Amino acid sequence: MPQGKPPVVPDDGLTTRQRRNRPLVLVHTGTGKGKSTAAFGLALRAWNQGWPVGVFQFVKSAKWRVGEEHALKVLGASGEGGTVAWHKMGEGWSWIQRPAAEGEGDTPDDTANAARAREGWEQVRRDLAARTYRLYVLDEFTYALRWGWIDTDEVVSVLRERPGSQHVVITGRDAPPALCAYADLVTDMTKVRHPMDTGQKGQKGIEW
Amino acid sequence: MPQGKPPVVPDDGLTTRQRRNRPLVLVHTGTGKGKSTAAFGLALRAWNQGWPVGVFQFVKSAKWRVGEEHALKVLGASGEGGTVAWHKMGEGWSWIQRPAAEGEGDTPDDTANAARAREGWEQVRRDLAARTYRLYVLDEFTYALRWGWIDTDEVVSVLRERPGSQHVVITGRDAPPALCAYADLVTDMTKVRHPMDTGQKGQKGIEW
Image (tube, rainbow over all chains, first blue to last red; front, side, top):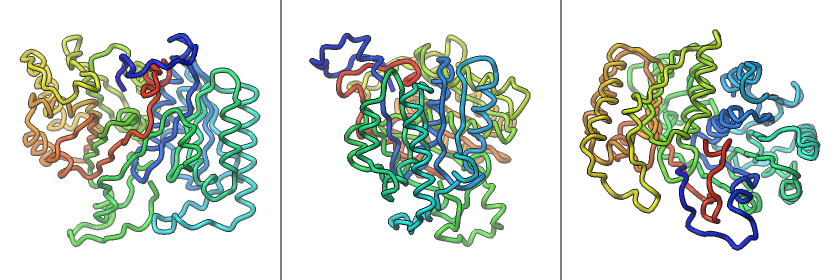
């Protein structure tokens, strides 16, 4: 995005610098490709600023994010930039039964997965309270919200009360309206065309 | 994106493996945030596969992409994963007079910048012919197309004829329809809300 003059100067009693450095909640939603890749691209900027980055991966497949995970771990260990912590919530946290595109309206009836999702969220809460990271990537977090495993109002309340300067980016389809209403930035990655539409399956280097 | 069964199996004479590994052209367009960050996130996956990655940066500001540039250079030099070449086309290639949001419909009348844009594109052409990279990031390339500095039909023709297995991701607003029609994947990053709407300027770690 360009820098430059914002179209509105709010009457919020903040200086430009205070307003500029206000911590942000960003949501990447929609059916298109790029929600998570953009979040990990953002993590590169945070790393470059020397910020501690915490990734909480709410996805199932072992293949997903292997590239991002490897890259961010190499960066975190490079001695330059910030640190990187990558949470898959243990093997027990590879929990989301990620539905096929057709079934995405369904609510899985899975008490164990719901409990694991809550565990992950409780860790995020603790880290926010302790100011453990400066950027949090909650990857595919919206599914746990949509399925009711974690209460959206509670999430918004915790985000609203988080101390210090902690940015949070949340990815996944169908972000709840209450989350989008609270977020500072919402981008809908809209699918115009995807190779799978014409019969092409995912491939290494592109999808993982 | 999920892996899984594509909805259509095309009658193209290719095996599933051949079809799966077909090189892709990806376009990230739209007015929202995430077009370039998603492209650089994709570069992490390519790097992880050991692919040589070539970035061609068609933007002006020195601040932009500093985080991504630093991170990808550290990765490229890490001895793990692939190599990374970052082209800003020299100082003479920091050329795009990136317009403000209001002025984005305008065509800059700038012969020198048009010539530099063509120089950059000619280098991309040569690299494609030589199979220099496995992933090309043509960042903010659409502006040069929209302003007529580079002919879109020529670009599509060069992409169509490129040899081997070379993926190309192109970012920027208002991708020309002919490019989108040819591309394998098009995502429109749609702005739902941006902090600048409410008077917040860009900040480090988030915008650069």
